Length: 107
Image (cartoon, rainbow, N blue to C red; front, side):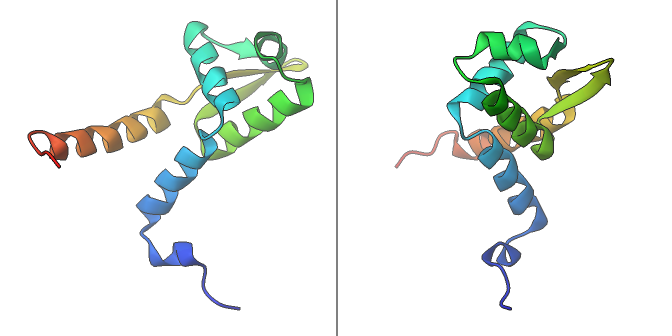
């Protein structure tokens, strides 16, 4: 079996691509924005905020959690989700580096 094309890139490139892929859906952006408005919440709260069925919301939460963008803690029968600050800071650092390099450049 041949090597994956992603093997041609650095581990950091692949990690960042996975993060951005996980965020590449409007429902996931809406989930992140909702989590910014609360300290923690249960999945049911998120379902009430989005025009999507509970299984669909769960799939989006799972994608965000697998990428490390959110964290989930089990509390009784509910899972409380919050943003993973460490991951968000990594993404912020990436965009900061890009904008820093672009300052003063014009195409």
